[in-house]
Image (cartoon, helix red, strand yellow):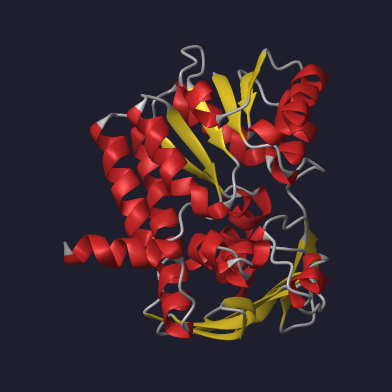
Length: 336
């Protein structure tokens, strides 16, 4: 499987830390912007990537590239995915998949029409420990309350307060605490429980973007509270509370490196199914299988999870009054 990388940010450096461990994947080319050409050239040389380009369109024209890995800023995901699919490339796109659920619905339809695989790079859905938690949910009886807190003070927040708005805090670039951090909590809940009945988001908003906030999800028989913050910090913790015990995860939902099952009888068991592998390793192993085997059924199963997560994110933003450019574009399209 020959992959082209679109982007040169931190997540791409994360990719380089483990990708050599994944079988049947070859990094064919990488592209970024003209101002980052020296950076992608260095990356290509250091990682043994055959080709590098100064723009995405050049990468799309490379016939050797079978799969596009899109690791660009959030607001560019939709357009870049669409272009890749139109060029006949399979696509792996970093989270959040799109800025609005309507964009993802359109992309999923296009991928199906062209018989291409479209996948979201979201580690949470593929982590062995998350899958193990789902398997063990019966151990804690009837779930009553779920609380997930991913709060991490951002080094960019100081600059933001001074008026220097970087993409992570830019509403025109689909930034904010929900899309950066709380999206992992959303995916964790979707992986374990599927779609909620209702969604509400109470956010701290500065300069039109949510710097922190609390999502409440009603699943009927239980309630969930998801906290994501970039303007303050707290111990990162997820607890799933049942009437016979609880499951406690004290690492972020995008890593889930260990968890404990605590029973009402005071027994306690710690689990770790991940053997020290990088958090992104497991999803890319699965991506290779899905694409090489053209497993459209599995791809559709994962797309359904992404659609649920993106619908939650979209409803949450709308309930808090956080407006992205994508919202305006979709509204204008509906009015035409």
